[in-house]
Image 1 (cartoon, one colour):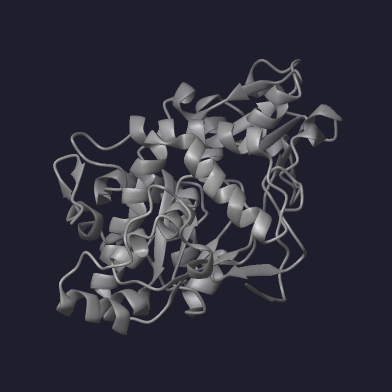
Image 2: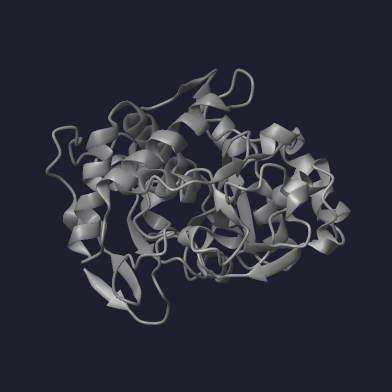
Amino acid sequence: MKATDGFNVTKRGGALAGPVLIVAILMAACGGGSPAARSSGSLLDSSQCAANRAAGTMTYVSPFGFDASAGIIDVFAAQRLRYFKDMCLGVDVVTSSQMSTELVASGRATVSSIGSAADDLGEVTRGADVVAVATYGDTSDYAILTGPNITNLKQLEGKTFGYHSTVPVAILEMFHAAGVDVSKVQQVDTQNYDPNQLVRGQESAIQAYQSNEPLVLSAEKAQFNEFIPSQFGVKGTFNVQIFNGEFLAHHRQAVTDFMRAELHAFYYCAAHRTSCIDIEQHYAQAAGSEYQVSHERAVWNLEAALALGHTLPDKGVGVETKAEWQPEATALEQYGISKSVRPLGKWEDTSIVASLYDGKTLIWP
């Protein structure tokens, strides 16, 4: 295990997930020990195996540390269960809550997760060299949380709304659908995922993830109201896996087999939830990071349900289409977040994950 300095590691719940640095985990050294682990031999033929090994070590950077989210926990599981090794892939993981997309775009990392299609498109219109290959759910994980006295989003006019860096387009669409005059809402960039700022009255409402802040407040038995995009007819997407564009261009088979292993782990974790929480906790403890088992279990229960319950018709988890992304691309332009969204075909590769399925069944050698 090694560490490199430079960035803060912060959990979405606001607690430090470890020392204030990026923790790079040479996870192969921690592999094994699980009764479900496969043998060390490859499941690929010699030519495929050689091609994947020639791609070199792939680095996954977690945007939320040791979080039991889809697109994160399944990477830890794929390593621990040796699914990456079955695909002849060498994989390192970096846990960080900042600059994950920048690391992938610059080529210092290979793959990461980002919240939605709109989040990804916002990055690529600003020049990020990343390509999206998987979208885990055809729904949004965003939410607006308010104090118990606010029962209608229009009541936020004249009050404060806390967001993180940029207000997600799904939130703006919710405001529009609810008839909110956004110019009358005082928007505050909190840079803080702590939902207790709402309880303390620092903000009247906050941007949230359905699978994080509401779970924290519910566990505390706090009083609040939650509004989600689907209540307002707002479509969205949930968890996008992005790869460095240059790496994908040169090592397409390695990217395909990375996603095969990761999705194989996703389905394992959906069926064996306690086992995968234990796996992620193992890595967190090895890195000296805090891991709140009860919270992470709730996170994974909700996110697994979001992914499994919101696939495209007759498709498996992760399969994405341009039509699925188009509403968010249109909304980005409509709300002035991006003046012109580049052609989706250049920044979204819809064929990789689709090729991994026979109908809704993941193909595993």
